[in-house]
Length: 209
Image 1 (cartoon, one colour):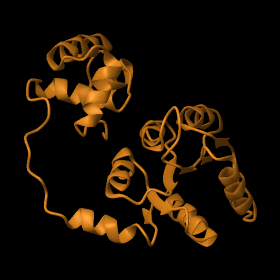
Image 2 (cartoon, one colour):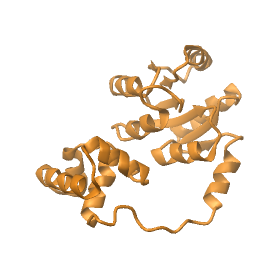
Image 3 (tube, helix red, strand yellow):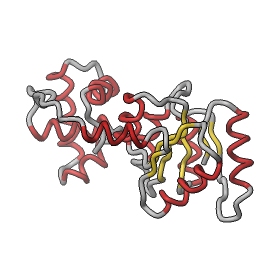
Image 4 (cartoon, helix red, strand yellow):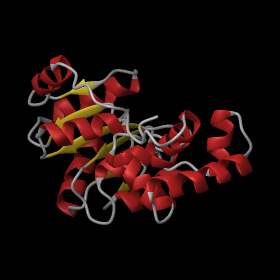
């Protein structure tokens, strides 16, 4: 699936992929919201994802896509080469990161690579990824110290946009228990509602589970 808010880019990538018999474009989308709808219907194995889009950006869309079953491999294909964008995409679950000035052959090679379980970073990105990985860790207190360990686990999964039923299955507890924990979490962190709590959690680095 190709996700980009520019029709010219979508058409160009689609035309490139059409020249390879072993790659089939099962859908296209113009933003993250549409991407989720198409992915649930068409179940793509690989998603080429732009990051800067209206309604839902590529990072948030990636986070939601990799929570689907079956989980697609997401490759960020973007003009953004800053450290923040790279880290955000990787933390959201992207398996690759390419800049839009790469050759078409690099895009094809990246698709094949992630299909075989590899991670791919384009030539303009790989060096930055190494620098980020080699940087000394910044020690800081864990977020939301007012929460219990179980409440932090639930907030982490809320930040990943999982529902109570799925959270309950992951943690081995009843959905009703999850609902009670959610109420406690909202009160403790001062969140107006579940969506607000999810945003606060993501801003604190949660939601990558």
